[in-house]
Image (tube, rainbow, N blue to C red; front, top):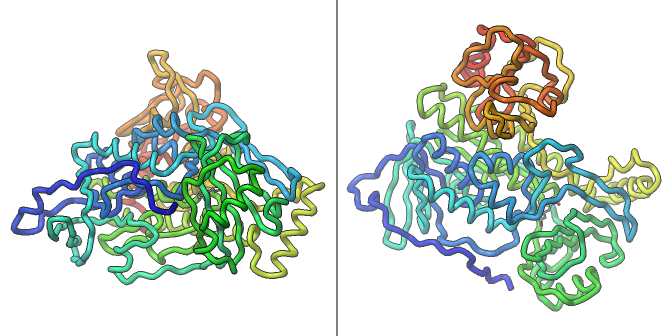
Length: 534
Ligand SMILES: O=C(O)CCc1cccc(O)c1
């Protein structure tokens, strides 16, 4: 059952680099062609940076891995050109339900408002996402994806890194100005640099099963505390495409991982839960998890992203989503630095912003895990009291923690210019921009985030005055029209309001009226030319 079915097979191809007498030098080498490595490589390539992407495998296999992709992740995937196939195949959902025993404690809606291109979440087997990314990578002539290229050695130099790469035809060396380590939780690059994680390892074991069946459950996230079919433990259910259902069952710290994966143990548990045996097992595994991270994500010219840099429990779906957000944070910075349009110290803000995001994710993940699988009698008493109260008191429902689902971080960063004017919407410098439906000059609809793309942009609300100058300016009221008022409301905009947007669509600065000198200063600041990171 755990022998992975190969879903997509790719060929090893000899690279001309393997025939060169001395190592060929590349601007960026990304190690690991999982979703995070692929997103990093595609983003860099789209920004005009030639990339080599190395992976030790040559296939995408079935397996129990990431399934939930959040709205922000989908917005990033859209910019990378892969959201459409993911949305088409994925199961869209936004409702979560939390049960205790057989009783519904409460339900939540992750996106109660209209006017967003992307849904709150989709569920999609990771292999479909990886396949869409590999197809996209193949369209980019400056992205060289090399299968069965395993990094077995790494030497750091002041101005770069030399990698030794093993292939079916022998080993060869490559030089890189920068290496991005996206080689996952068991990162070989991390080991080669002798880097250790700090954080927590949780003892509780969970059974994870992908089950194929014609289920009558709706496309919602259902979470149970102490259900009658699995007493004293928790259970989680998600719908995936192709009639596959993801089931996570808490087993406790004493569970025997090997025995629990056998069909003799798994099938009765699932029969108990589903009330029938009309299903087949696609994938079964037993896992424990860690909430931990590297102290620093940037080590000279080697930069860590995704699970190679930080790890969380599955609850909240923060692993893959935060990894893809690492990729987008890094790509624009690396591209600017490599083109000489920003100082090298801009890369330090990747470390600063994304390690703060990792701490946020680890904090959420740890608190959820402590609530779901209490580790002491005191934690258990607290958990059970909250659940008892939540049955009758809505305020206590907010204290129930069955996993806080992934949301993007607002960066507290030297790249932001602090507000000097009064603003009242939830948006603030460092935050990802909300989307809004707009009309183009020709009357065709376009989403705000589509119009922004991946470039630094000034958004200026028309007021009859002088339009600010910048490398890219979009005037609301001319270039983009806000027919339904979503933009004005979400941005707390008034005529003259002006926003400076980072290449990753986070807000860098805003003013009630455009001031060319202030805009120029904020633009230099967002590229790391100003303040302590100059
Ligand atoms: O709903 C959640 O909190 C996470 C669902 C999930 C994500 C990744 C793996 C897995 O087994 C469950």
